[in-house]
Amino acid sequence: LKARTLTLADAMKIISAMFSPATPQYSLLGGVAGYKLGWKMFFPEKHALFAPVFKSGMISSSDSISLSKHHIFSAEAEFGLVLRAGFEASNTQYSQEEVWRRVDHIELCIEL
Image 1: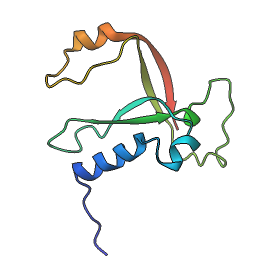
Image 2 (image 1 turned 180 degrees about the vertical axis):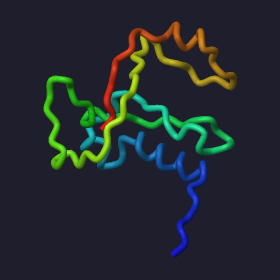
Image 3 (image 1 turned 90 degrees about the vertical axis):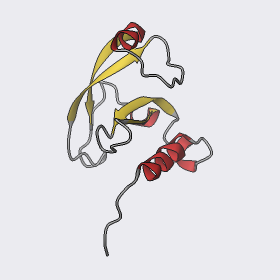
Image 4 (image 1 turned 60 degrees about the vertical axis):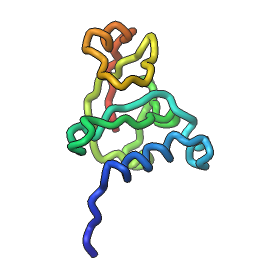
């Protein structure tokens, strides 16, 4: 079987489904805690996409992690930007200065 190429429309359908409280997985995952920027430079027509980070996936620095229970196979250092104010949808790109003005603080994170 030939693998199918993922299109931007496919990715947007997947992300849209992830945001839907109507899906049974949404409540099992604890609802949305924040958002993650990803798929950078994957689609030529869109620089990056964002997707939800679910509350059930948030683990405190004081919690312990089981590699087998959580099926951990890699770890990646990340920066989490905690915003003091959200962003309104806009047809024009926000400037770097506008974005930084909305950042309350930065959290160091490890993506597992």
